[in-house]
Image (tube, rainbow, N blue to C red; front, side, top):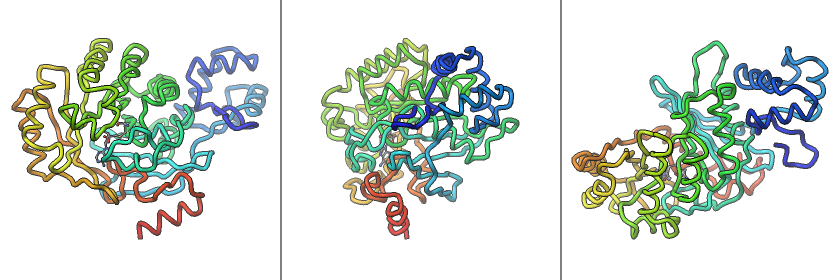
Length: 371
Ligand code: SAH
């Protein structure tokens, strides 16, 4: 929505019911919202004047008070493996990143929910820049809308983006107010029309918000666990001091029950010599055995200044095998896009404090560091 004084309402920030109230406020019938959504999302049209079945008068009045605005692409990069990354500039001048990961039969867009992050996980490069602000709903939906366009979306063609994961910059559940309506637009059949199991919110473990989301919406949940006991987890994921593992798991099982979901995915970053020992695998298996849980092992992606190293391939495979032997479903996440720093935890790692420097310098900084 237009947060800056004098700007028009950004229609990408409104859910279906929000859009209905908005058009009613302009003296129109609620069904106009459906027509509008078809233009915006089915046909990917961003120009209100081109929405030919809306009536000239309504279009004119609408265009006076509303528009469709997305973040702006500053740098677009492609990886040898087909992964793509965009550095985006927000209207406020700050920068975020999003990543598209193509795989056979599906395309996953990884989006950001905040500028920076306050969770302070020790192995994550986004943490280094600290927390700046929450994205609003339009800035979150706008990433998907923009990516569709960048990826050559056509209403008649096959869908390019089939999955959206909130695994870019930020802690999505710390921005509940904007993330939940954004997810709603993504799952609305008149919106981005993604299936409910294909929009995933990943959280470092904000237990109260996890309890709430189980009752209020219907997205898939991933939880960044990273350690099998409180001592180690509190060191890696500081929010664990407030919401320890027992409470976290309770919120997970509550979610599965409420949502009738099959399972929760637990992410576990593999840090050499820190959390990757066989004893850790056994402890983790004991924690999750017999529960609706899957573990996704993420090889650590290093960034400048980090004190951690990625676990060896053998350690990762052994860890997975021990989990499976211990009765827990486990997979290893293939690293994608690491040649363009698009892999997990690498977003906004190359330019220090990218959010506070001006765009021109930002570009220079990015190129200088990469050269
Ligand atoms: N704040 C949310 C979502 C963003 S991070 C969360 O914590 O879940 C998305 C995933 O990438 C998380 O599981 C996170 O722990 C992981 N990650 C962060 N830094 C990483 C790194 N350097 N290497 C590999 N994975 C990392």
